[in-house]
Image 1 (cartoon, rainbow, N blue to C red):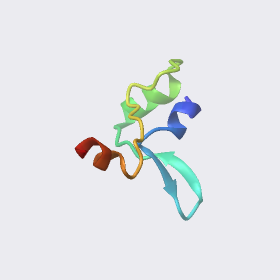
Image 2 (cartoon, helix red, strand yellow):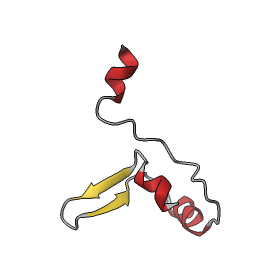
Image 3 (cartoon, rainbow, N blue to C red):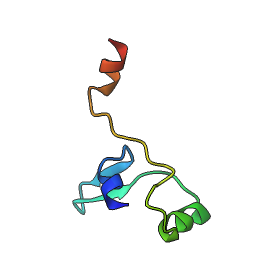
Length: 59
């Protein structure tokens, strides 16, 4: 799952701790399910299209 997280839109850098975390808003049950499932595919994964991704879609 870590490889998916590296390329995910919700992977956010915390500048104070200099660590990445998942910024997806989940309730406690959803978060526990995400952590303990053995699936290699995260159902919340959304690819990060970069800063200019929106502009590319408009052209």
